[in-house]
Length: 49
Image 1 (cartoon, rainbow, N blue to C red):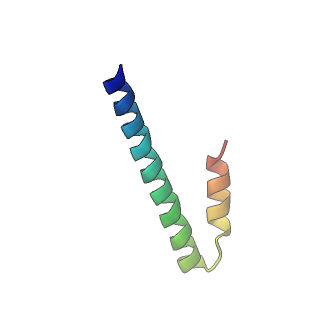
Image 2: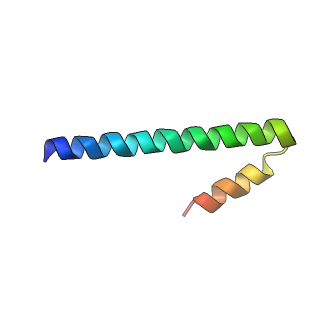
Image 3: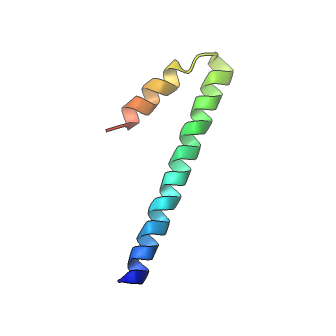
């Protein structure tokens, strides 16, 4: 039980790190390429529940 919970926590944590890294990368690229983070904001808001 404890080992299973640990695996779940590690997997979820890894997913959160990857997703947040992708979001940051998209936002940074949007700001650099377009000069405006508007597409990134709409993308992030579309991913939010």
